Image 1 (cartoon, rainbow, N blue to C red):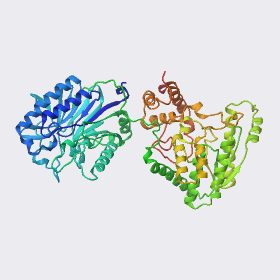
Image 2 (spheres, rainbow, N blue to C red):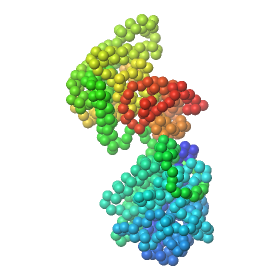
Image 3 (cartoon, rainbow, N blue to C red):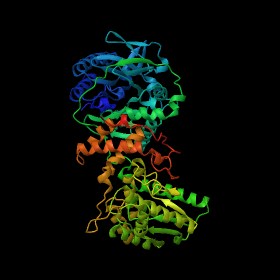
Length: 638
């Protein structure tokens, strides 16, 4: 598996076993880790990992410093043999000053040494006692193993095989500084920053540290790889945990085990295309310049073949993690309810007309209206729930719609449309036995006609129920269910709607209403425009025409959110859905998605107002602006 061609790099943090002030032992451990972990593009070790961070006045000992070079020579030989790239921490002397440095070694060669800029010198830290900082540096090179090596915190490392990939280095306290080096590194196109740290533990510190890294990686749209010293660094009054993190744009990809007595290795695949996509859309990067001039050091990070993929890929990227469920669905509900309340208050409207079908979309819309009326203390009888059974309506969906409306104690109207649609067929000379687009769309437009007239009759508005997934695929009838006076679900994908209804069922209603809602969630998705079978079961299932909504929403997310190519989306889908869908289903769904997406922009250009819910919106007034006549050829694999 060549992950590089899709923009992925594999990084690893290592919190190794070590002995304090024992370079021979520590270098043996580092070499062992290199020999057993050759798959990563870059491995980063903690601050002063070659000697240990806790040497204190032993840092002044010539014997310790001399043995640093013996250890470095040994590590370089193993690196050359394994073709590994690593970043390790070691003390180095330059012009009679001792520096706490990060040393970059690639395929046996030392490419650069980066000194720590900001020294920790409070509470349990006394680094000024031993070390000079980057501000004290007077030379751009340092002598290591009889070679002049680039030296300074002004070094950036650039992949000679991929000029778009640059990384920088910070050491522990640099992360926390008021004017942290990471800002200039990010503004100089570093897509990743490696931090070699020796950050001890006390109550509450771990959470603060992780929150800081999370926010920083999101603010700067970069990968932050944080390698922390492990328990063997603990001595006297300080305890270290080895808790390390790999964050990408605010998302945790991997976190190491804490307080481990083994070599703790944390590996993740970073998606540089996500980071570049975010920066393209972030005006801070185009409007701000780095205040520092950097030297660029070339590094050869050759492409590798991997047997696996070290990155979590959710099959439902729109849906947050399960442990955030209450908070997230509560927030979705609040956004929808407040949005609807604001519109009703603005137009002084106390009546809402909504078509209900017993399907997912109309059910969620109805629940939102119900909550909005409760919030505004409006009479629930001002909610006109209209069921309009047609040629494809089944008893299951019809009964669920009716029973839900009754249980909510709102106004229920039942207006069958078969006769009026048949009359319309006669008007346009259409054979009602021909079940084509005319047959289907005539029903959708008749229902919209009824709803609009009811809105005029009752001085209300028609609430649209169509969702984000349907908008992306053009799965709506133009001037039919495509039109309303407010599209309450227009910002929510189908996969999120189902889960929102389940959340309502669990959190707000008694068992009778909950059972109805759960049965609606279990009903096959269908527009019910074609007749059911003889047993009154739905024959027209949407996902048989469009492909699974799980796949379509997956494609939509990565196409719009990160601008991924179809090939990359397919690569991710093949991994995410390998136990669910075969390759043909994935390929066909991707191909059909892009055709439908490009062919239906004209519908999206004419959609009504509706609240933005997720990171993605397809409203032409909000996030997505696209010509209606753009070609899809470049997005369809030949």
